Length: 217
Length: 268
Image (cartoon, rainbow over all chains, first blue to last red; front, side, top):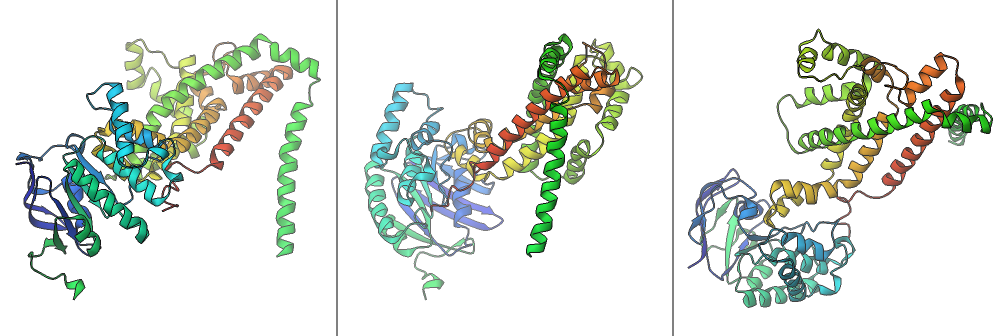
């Protein structure tokens, strides 16, 4: 069974952490600012060093660089490349796919439609609205059929109504694609809406499942 | 306050009039037909060709070394960095003549580097290759400094995100970081080229001033003024001025737009 597993993973601001995310499961990591949520995602994405054991599909990720992990990562600031159109942002993600040019073009078209951003394909990210940028970044993160999707406070910069629309869309998309996802947020409503399971991270440590987050008491 | 503005306005006018006066004096020194003849002189054409050829090669070298060095300085901290950065800034503040003297002693036949190069059949001194060396030497620090600032303006997380999209660090550098720092790098290139085109002191020491051999445009001005042939000197000076003006205009136009890495989240 493909799964993400962290065993005694440590970093100067995190852990030791033990966490298992089952295949197709969406887990939300809820916690206040500075709890280490962002660090956790960066470790899994291959962007930060760590100690301990991190496996995906039973394969150790030790020494595997980010560009070989095929993990979709949606950062809080999205980091859409401003010198490229939305379409070219996605095509860049497919540049080293071992598929033909035609297949890559078709995949780009598919993912643009799937994320409902095809009508803005030729626009530069900085000319889009907040919600459109979110869709474009999600499309780019999903372009390579990632095995795991990491979402770092994905909708924190959006207004409430746009946020709710995107929650629904992301839920539908995730179920449609059967994606395993780890979502980091400090918004309890977002965590409950998007995830199958919610875990709480505080001061770099996971709280027991039954614990009430201290900032809610 | 109005008194201060009046004084500042007076200063601005005085500076502008002086620059304009020098330009007009130079441009009006020769009648147009004499200037046209001087522009067609073999020496003028040679100097223009050599200047373009050497300065563009020097620019390519300076861009290669300067961009990579600037990138490293922008992205990493290492022991002795302040010392290295100060050393790299040194050619910008020392007289080019002094820099040229240093290069002359470094590459002279008596020096270990110079003798090793001579043994390998490389003769840089007193040749057009020496011109390229001198121009590269003075242009590179400018490009390092500008490239460092251009890369510092690009959030390194863009390259990290590019990594999660399957791009190796080299491809992320080439396809994401370089284009995002593009405007700054282009300004650096224009500035470096202008510096290389106008280079005189270091070139004089390293390549010498030999007519129709190492005679760049600034060297032609010097040689012809020294020998009293003002027509060619003025023609070369006017070519240099026109090119410098055009390059400065390009820099101003480039500076007019926002850097690609900025403003991304202003609509957020």
